[in-house]
Image (cartoon, rainbow, N blue to C red; front, side, top):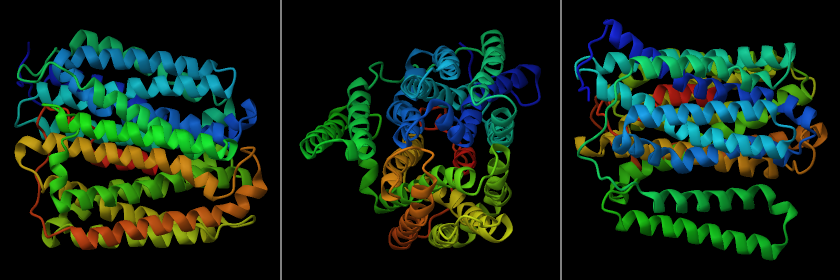
Length: 487
């Protein structure tokens, strides 16, 4: 097996970076284009708002539940092997998504996509970390992050054009040629690596109980309006019991996916609560804002994607400066101010109504949201990693990434009900009347995130880039994760 000896600039190194960028790029591209395609999917498949929620949450559910397991499987069975399995699963699911005859089939295919993504995204960074020389690892990861960030940024344009020019189905079919090239390059040019010191017993009980708990909770939040009180109570109890079983499984495991000992640090706990609040607000707001732009303000798919690009550009342009500010002042200040700036943006967005213009109605809120997110991205990661020693950097990074994904999952499940959208996805009256109420809820969440940071985050020292080839590193690079969420 190859060791960590690849040097930047060599042909072998370029092939490995290309393989990881292509494979994870399809996941990032898919994540940024599906939102833009949702209104068209709703019209074509006669989908309810609940069906659109499931189209997003079907993917997020399996991704969130299996993300930590996916990284550890690569450590145990071979990172290249698991990466290829994830790539094949994601590609096959993309084909099924594009061929889906109804919303139910699309949701099922999206869930399989999430399984593939849970193997793909951890595998891409783990391969880089395990094959590059330690001196060149940060360069390789930065190249991966930058190129994957570009995929997220162009996604709304590409997806919008495909939806308007041909069909929403091409949003999923576009993954096929990219993935085919990724498969070829990976098989030919990526060496196999694994962690010989890792525990060879993957945490299957933890993954299963997490999936059942999150799945049950998501089902209750989305479908509660269609269920009897008894069914809601019973399903809620099942979800709570599964989450409790997950906690017990992790506490008893010799090598847990999520070490609960990390939460003994008040700063680690506070940073993750801030993550939960901020990412719930961001994910829920983006889901409803795209619907508002297309269904109420009558934007096309391309225009609605372009309307949100300032968020992505601001995050990518200012995150490094925000990180420098955090190194000078400590993360508390930007982590407190950032969510409050986002709060102002969400309040401004909540004032959108039929007839609102982009320059005066949409753009101010989008800019404030992007500025606030840019402030919080780097410092949040630094605050999380500053609480643990070197041996737990991977686990801390992985836990924080999982929290961000769970936040998005729950927000998409909950907010449409808060907005009063319970019927057709194309019910513009319900959306127009409930959008402001939903944005106010997201604003409260963001403000709570800022206050939690103020109360729990201390002045922390700067944290070096995470480059250890473990499951935690193998979760998404923070800058890419945040750019993807913004898109």
